[in-house]
Image 1 (cartoon, one colour):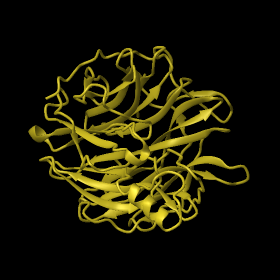
Image 2: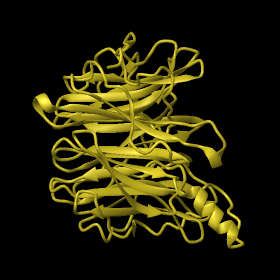
Image 3: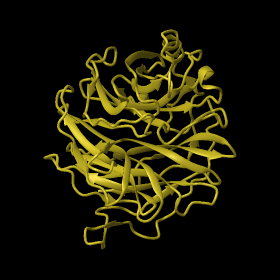
Image 4: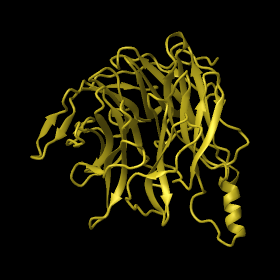
Length: 431
């Protein structure tokens, strides 16, 4: 077992309340928002948070970087996010973790009672040339409520070449965990084949999207879902009450159109349907926008999805959209999420309340400052005007979960009020 290194928990009460701009230009308080609190490893830059909740147990993982070395930390709340435990280091080898805003560490609880297991998954980046890289995805598990973790293990064959990461994680049945990630294990062979055919490869290396089931006894069973995916946008995964697995990612459609794709498995992840294009946005881009989708499935099997794209109604602008599907084959027309005037929104993350109503958090730059906002979707599908959660502080890459019925927990990375050498993790409970 790792030493379970503990760092001092830094918790500050917010000095001021968050406000949201109204159409009149005045400000109003965010409805039902409790004062925020802050988690962080002192002297480190604390970024890339992820959340998971099971009832009143809430978990937050993040990356703390200092002097060029990064570690993964976990804090646990037993009261829905009111108080958190002191952070515990997850990775047993000091400084060998890696993360970016689009591939944060992920955490879930699988199993129940004495068999409950916390699983954390993260990327470890290779610094070698692209054609010889062997990026890895690693996991560690805790069976004592997050106080200690097993040594990290690889989720795949370590001889595989290529970039690998942008993972998503969700619990399944019988203590299993489902993961989806981007994988470049076939990149070198594909590039060589293109060269032999007289069509030299240009741009980012080819990537595929994979699904894996990590069983309770530690076995990983992999399935390739699709190829020709966008190189560095995070993926999304969900599992419904019947065990069906749902995956979403940004795909490269003909003409380098970077739109959102979706696939479903009805046999627990062993086979996936042919991909579905969620919306024909036709975002033409010869590169990666680093902004993947978010996915959830309600009790009746309706798929809810949120994503970003660019719209071209004159001057191109980035926008956020939301859609649903009752069968996983056809999605409703996209509904635009209203954002502030002259803003650049991105990085939406979606969760469902106990009655199945979606809540979407995202960040947007307005007036040179990036802030975190929350949009509520009514039962009829109408997206209500969003509210700013982060006030005037510099905030980005939010995540959201439901803890107790009627209460949500939101986390984001913030530089406001942080030490000069880094950033902190903000958490806020919202009704």
